[in-house]
Image 1 (cartoon, helix red, strand yellow):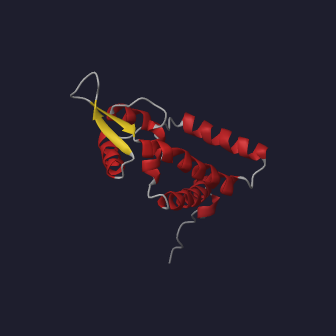
Image 2 (cartoon, rainbow, N blue to C red; image 1 turned 90 degrees about the vertical axis):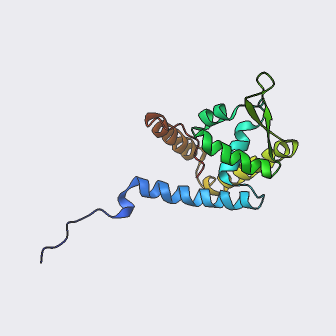
Image 3 (cartoon, one colour; image 1 turned 60 degrees about the horizontal axis):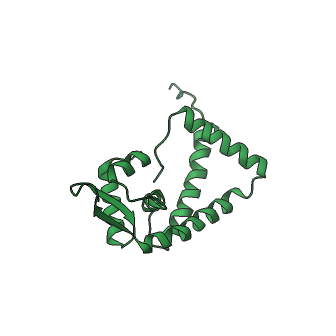
Length: 153
């Protein structure tokens, strides 16, 4: 019997460690948001609309690196939660815009504080220099790989 070829262990891959940390950070954040009845994707859309003029869904989609259909689905969920409103564009009644409601605007700082707390829980174990280095390296990889879409999953 021929022995199977030798293969590398999962843990020798940097991607394995990135995924492990990312999954734990993301799942913890999703749980915090769930307490506020908001998903990570919904939070990302709300944050994109925060402190801006009403925007056409197509512009939101472009800025977030998502399809227009995905933005429409997210907007529909947030509209049902009274966190976002869809309205006719003031300059073109056929076009629509998305904007946060007062309730949505008031909720964004609360959700941002949860994001800050989640980051602190995971990354305060690093020294300030380690944290800056990690951030610099991840941003460099994202830039080199032309990764511009907002991660919502």
